[in-house]
Structures are given as C-alpha cells and as structure tokens.
Length: 264
Length: 337
Image 1 (cartoon, rainbow over the protein chains, first blue to last red):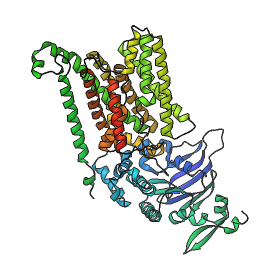
Image 2 (tube, each protein chain N blue to C red; image 1 turned 60 degrees about the horizontal axis):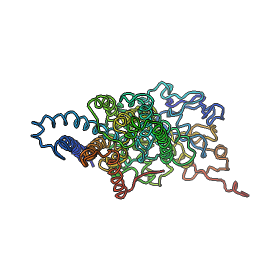
Image 3 (cartoon, rainbow over the protein chains, first blue to last red; image 1 turned 90 degrees about the vertical axis):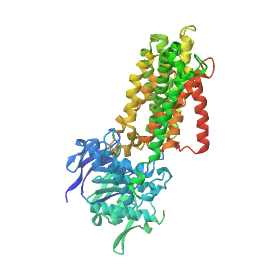
C-alpha cells in the first residue's frame, strides 16, 4: 500500500524563538487506512491535523499528499483531496442542515458559482448515508452537539475527498452515534478513503484505527500498526500515568492501573 | 424524501419575485409622489402636459429616486456582508466605524481640501476603510470577551473617536459656509441630488453590488470558522477582503452623497433572514430589494410629508428602531457574545 500522506521531519512552532509545538515528525500514512492520533490534551494533535490540511505552514520539513508537496496544490484542488471535520464549530446563522451540508460542494464550484441539481443530490446522499435525511430542513443551530458533529461529517462526505481528517470526532457523540460514525469510517476506508482522526480516548482508537500515532507534548512517542504500538509501556509514556492493556473478547482494552492511584 | 422536494424552495423564489415587483411599484409610484407642483400626487396627465412637472420629475425626482435606491441597496448589502463575514448578526457599517469614518473623511475634505463630490467621496472611502480596519484590529487585540462582544466594543470606540474628530472639525469650520455642509452629514438626506451625483455614485455602487451579489453563496462559507472555510477551498483572508472592500466602497460612495443614514444596514438583513432563511444566496437579494424599498419609501416621506424636508437619517432611524424592537420581541436573536 503506497503512502497517501507523507510527513518528513515536520517541525512547527508559532514563533521561531519559542519552543516547537511539534518536533521533527516523520511518518507515512497508507491509503485506505484509518489512523488514530492518540494523546492527552495539549499533545499537538490538532496542530498536526492543521499542518496536513495546509492551514498551518511548517517551520521545517514537508507534507506530501499523494506524492506531491502540499504547497504545489491550489486551494480548490487541495480541498478536493482533503476534508476536515472540526472539533467544535460555532455556526452563527441558522442554515438548514441541507444548506449546511451543501457547503461541502464548494471545492467543485467556482468563486461565483451556485450549487446545482447534482450538488443537491450529493448532499442529500451524504445525509442519507448518515441517517440524517429527516433533519434536512431543520436549522443546524437547533441540533444537539452530537447531531451537529454528524452534520459536519455529512458535509465532509459531500466534499468527496480522498482524505478525511477528523478532530476529536466522538467528543459530543452518544453511543449510537459513535457506532454510526465507526461504521461510516470503516465504509469510507473500504472505498479507499484515507482517514486520520485525533482522539484522547484509547477506546475509540482501538475500535476504529488500523494505525496508531502516540503523541505527547509535540513529540511522537511511537507510530505503527495498532497492535504493535498499543502496549502498556508506550501508553503509560504517552499519558504520563500507569496504564494496563488487557484483552477482553479478543480485543485490547486500555485501563488505568489502579495501583498508580495509590497514595495519590 | 426526494431531492426535488427539498431543493427548489419555490416559496423563496416567489418571495424574491414579489419583492422585485413591490420595488418596481414603489419606484413607479414615487415618481408621482411629492409636494410639487401639486401636494402628494402628480396626476399622470399633468406630467404629460405640464412642462414644469416634467422638469421637476426628470431633473430632480428621478435622480433622487435612483440615489435612494442605490443607498438602500448598498447599505442593506453591506450590512449583510459584514454580519456574515464577522459572524455577528449585530454589526452594520455604522457599528464598525465605517459610517463615522466616512463622515470624518467628508468633513475633513470640506474643511481643508475641496467640496467637490469626487474629493469628498474619495476621502470618505479612505476613512471608511480606515475605520473598519481600526475596529477589526482593535477587536483582535482586546484581551477579554468573545469575538462578537469585542467587535461591537471596538466599533463603538472607533466610531466615538471619529465622532469627536467630526466635532473638532465642526468647531473649526466656518459657521456660514462649511458648518452647514458638515452638519448635513450628521442628519443624512438626499435633497439637492442631481444627475451629476448619479453619474459619480453609480460607477462605484454598481460594480460593488455586482461583486457582492455574484459572491453571495461564498458568504455562507466565509461565515464559518477559518479552519472550516479553508478546508472547503476558500482563501478566507483574500475573499473576505474582496467582499469587505466592495461593501465599504459602496457604503462610502452613498454616504458621500447622503450623509449618515443609519439602521438600514442592521435591520434589513435581519428582516431578509427572517423571510428567506440564512442562506445568503437568497438573503442577499432579498436584503437588497427590501433595502431599496425601505430607503425609497423613507425618502418619499422625507421630501413629501411636511412642507420642509425631514432629514432622511431621522426617518430611517425611527422606522428602523421600531422594526428592530418588533423583531426582537417576536423571536430571539441568535447571538453568542
């Protein structure tokens, strides 16, 4: 499987004289896989997503998308390659859910163009895929946090990109929506979409990901296939707390080691 | 549920067509509405036969109607653009230092440079842009409050600064020649508008409105977070600048002729949104049509209600504020400060 996203010696900091937020990061993410970036709050996970998206410019190193350096892509061309589902989005105006999902079609429209019949069809299909068709005419501002996150995913689906980045996608989801999200991610990966998501929840990584990147304070602790990276030692180093990995129903489960709480 | 059941929203198109017809009707009726040569209404046959009536309508009333239309459309479009770009339903050109900046530029021009409309309009535009840039920069550097609150506070501060500047200029102005001209700005009005004003204002207003109208769907994208707008293929900084320059230039151009006419840019986008929903593809044309109707009707009343002219800004503020109160009482405004 060839790498769709390649990061080589990537460095990032907000100013040159301050310490790097992200230090010397290299990895290759194969196409059609699901990669979880796992780490505690403040590890630099969102920064990494924004670097892959092209929203932030690295201080050093390079991001390549499908073998081409990221800066060689035009804005619309890149947004047909990469879609983003942000963690939390403040929507100030009450667009209908359909109008909101339709915004995902903008990479296919010129600056002065309006969405046409075909774009409405794609948006409608995205809503149906996620079981949101019944919400199509509801104002997006009246949705619950979880429904809003699913609507943002529907918008990303309507974008028909080859790479899907999700920032803490399960932060507002209940169990049933979490299940639907996992199904959708697996469906998309099966169709060849490369998925990268950040999470601070090891369970979500175990359930969804093929590959795992462990991050702490801007450094990659380890990266590779899930089973190889998901060890008690590395997770303990990532979270700075003693962690055990047990197997329940032939699936790894990450638990906080109660002995580490003694005397605390 | 089928796609065709969702897509066309025929009600929106019917509404826009209705507003278009209403605007044409208002314009047509306004030609006959006034105080001279007969109070309130010129009979159409008089217009065909009376030389004086013809000259009045063609030479004075028609250019004034066109400028009133341009004024209403520009302020409403600029208000819609600013509310969406700043992601804040409480802003309008007057809230962000644009109108006061334009008035300061115009007063400065009258006092120290020239009363020629071109120079006044040029300086009004420059100071309108400066006012906006100053408000925006100040809001970015404030250390407390959410974005909505910071922007409104910064706008109030910058507007007050320019107002005090206008006050100083008024104090320094010649009370017989310059002061009346400057005072005109603070009241707002379209008396004395001629075809020359139309020729000067339209080359700015038409392209500005065309840009805003053609980019109206992009406004939806630009009302989202920067990271989302970027991921959807926009260049948020560049596209916001294009739209803001177009909006501010049209505002400054009409303000150079009409003076400070408040409330249109705030209330009309709200009304349009209430009628068509938030999608700017429909909100913007609705706002432009309603803005045109509102300004033309207010100007009709300003010139015809009393024997003397009522300043237009007084009427737009009166009706605008009343309408705003009604809208606020009828449903909540969705603002996150």
